[in-house]
Image (cartoon, rainbow, N blue to C red):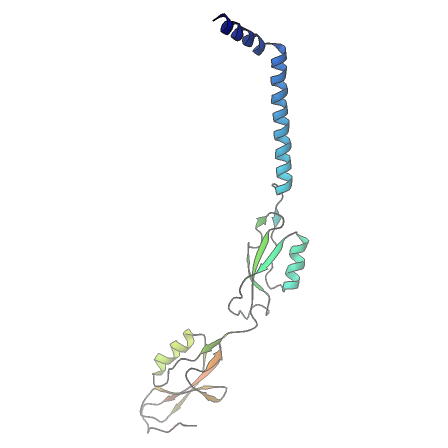
Length: 197
């Protein structure tokens, strides 16, 4: 029993001795200094406070994108091309992510979408023997433009032919989006004609 009492008595004296208190103060100071140094190192390696404003890449070529982003320590990656937009030069940036004006860290990757070289080709739907009211919305919905409407004597008022640049085209033909299609329509009151070319 005396052994335990003496042990706790000596421990109590040690805890309240100057040597112990100095060691505690030194340990706390070392922990504080090491923590501060570690935080400073983390901030410097992760660029915690460094922010870069993403520039606008709209309508820039890939060479211009590379130069612009390189000057700001940013990278880029090309995503799939979008639908052709005539308001943008071919192969220029049409969209970007993050957006212009966003703040990012150094070496951040900016994703860009390029304008393709032109409109894609679309299959001409079968609107022959449909009324003009039915045919026009279908063609317009697919991206075609309606050109001249020619009426010829025929018992029906249906679309009898489709033409593009003066040539007869068949349903299923592939034309560029925004191509102009002319319609040959029956006048609904004449004699039926043979339109074979």
